[in-house]
Length: 190
Length: 253
Image (cartoon, rainbow over all chains, first blue to last red; front, side):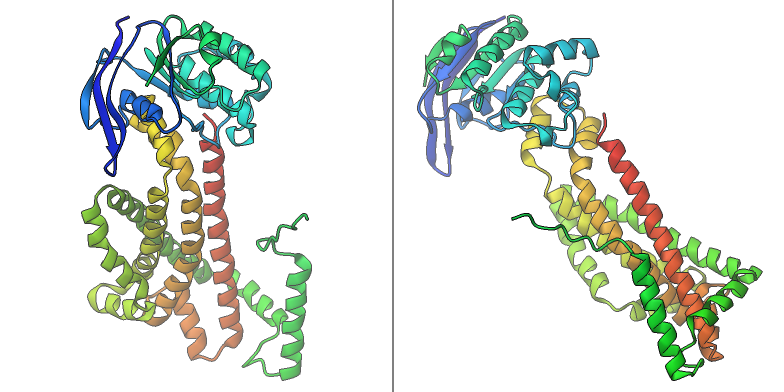
């Protein structure tokens, strides 16, 4: 899998620059951890990579024809549907037993048939993470994916994440300096 | 402090009986059946009416016409709301028209409809006119309130157009659809029968009501009014029941 290369990317909102001439290289098939203080444009960079926000200038190389999956800062689950249905929506090809196994790996066995609106914050976060990890995406963009999880759960979820990534390129945004080690990730700064 | 949820939708039998008793007492005090017939007399008259063939013909005629007007307004209102949510030009173009339709009194519409069209379709046309802006406005509000974060999620995961509509948009639209239907269902019956009462098309509930008024058969006026209320409630229950079933189905994959 080829690297994703960001060339001189800039973005401003209402004249206020958020990203200024950013150049980065994310190694293909590996987890990269993007670390930077709040307000430095990490989420904006992920949104540009996901194709949700256009950059003012600069370019991205290596994402052409690749499918992107994302864990947003918010969980963005469909509240009326069960946790299982939220995941099945993006990966209808997976069998019930495969899904059950994946839910169990995330410690979500009891949450499978619960409506998303009834899930706790931590459970909803893990369902959002599972949805992205089980999708057919070639590249995964994770915006503070372990937010709201306690230390023990975070460790277990990180392990499940690594298993489910199956050698795909992953860009993870975080504030927590311990997370790169949890994910065996290469650290990049903005 | 726990707040008690107020429920105003359920009819209690004791409350119905209480108001029937008030009606009975008022009828006994006035003792003028021409002005206020007793409930028992109205129910007896209703029993006789139901046994007449013309009763069912009138009810079926009015029901089918109003249901047709309602259905047509629902389909067109939904289609226009969808177009208006997509194209600003359509929204701007329709805004004065919808405002106009909402503000014009039913009676004016009825008179115009009698002048321009045949009386036969009067109740359909009036029901259509009353329901169209309600459905349009509610669905347009719903479409404007769709959660952009979920729309983005659907875009990132490349959900098909059908999946986006079925699982992301339609479920969010249901509360707006429910409100629109609930308001318009009552409205279409009131306006439809009022139109028949003014235009007096043959073989309709409106004509029966008109005849009862002309011949000062107050008991018949009450009986026919009761029939209109019952049919209106049944129609409302049927449609809202279907919406309830639809929402249950939509929340499953």
